[in-house]
Image (cartoon, rainbow, N blue to C red; front, side, top):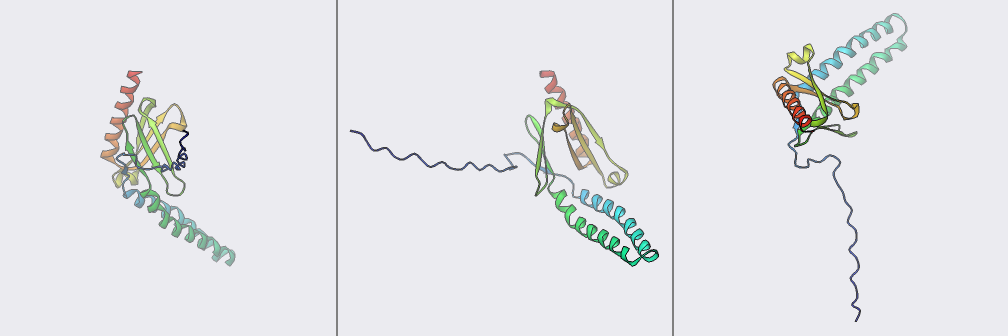
Length: 174
């Protein structure tokens, strides 16, 4: 009369990738951003290392550790910067802009188009020479704002126009 019941299926762990593709068209930033960042780090550390060498010569040989430390930081930065730049990507999703960064300490910011207040485009002199620009997407909340460094200027300008249009359209629909 009573049929033996089959044991309930064992629960399968639900493993979702922290920042998988989820069908999005992820676009990387320009590799030229690594060049700009490497030159910036070199231009910062080189004068400090020279000052350390001069101080070691004039004051005490113990200060020779200073340029050695700057050299170590420079070598580490030259290795790290291309990996950091390669880990930055963005995608325009149907309802939001997604920006992801990082390899070890990953972060992903999604900015709903309806929350966008304004979009800034900026480019310093060296980035302009390399044809790069940065986008800063601003909302009322700093937690939902985001920045996207190192885009080619044409891509950045087009993205700024599209994001502003999406924001206006979403706000008009509210």
